[in-house]
Length: 328
Image (cartoon, rainbow, N blue to C red):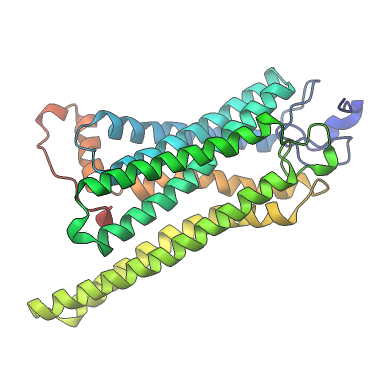
């Protein structure tokens, strides 16, 4: 049986990552039985989840209800938006349930939802990176049935692995009965969070390598076009700077959002201060806030359909052909 909180435990960090036994250490995704004092960090996370949900819901509706977005790259962007939408809903749901309906079952279900959604979000980012690389490396054969099949396989692996990760706490790999085995986020076990952290770091390493290759391919293509068409060297420099800038934005955003939490997840333990987990987790949630801006709203086709929907003239919008994912 779990220990109950002492009466004065509300004086410490409460809410989503509540301290157990009033010690101010060890964060808690696990809901406690007695009412909790409202934690400002939980309010910020809930508000972030609301914005994330609204923003990604727009992308999901645009992609899955518009016949123009059936190319493989848009399916991957739709997968990313769906994962981020679930992450935002998970943040809102957990805030509501932890204060209104606290229980172990609710704690495990919401933790599983958040693990699934964030894992699917990072995996979708990796799949988009692979798709962009292949669109440049195999440009002549990209628009083929093989690409569609490969995209479906990546989506299946992405969501299959993410759901498996999310089911682990529900199926018993948690620290509800063994607090000493907890990670910085209850009720996730230390081993579970360590695997997630290593997976996120590995995904970043692969993305970094692929985007470096993409940058080299773009610069080489720009040089070849400049030679063939007798362009000035300045045009090649502009293309190279644009590729490097895009690379910096994508990788810089991912690194600044996820690396602090991934590293702290490996180094921290059940005795780590709750404040440090909040400080590292909040930027991780902001990755789901920035993904639609980087991968969806910057796309000209999505912009066109979005403006047409806002102006109420979707029926008069001219059809268009989806561009290469390297342009997305």
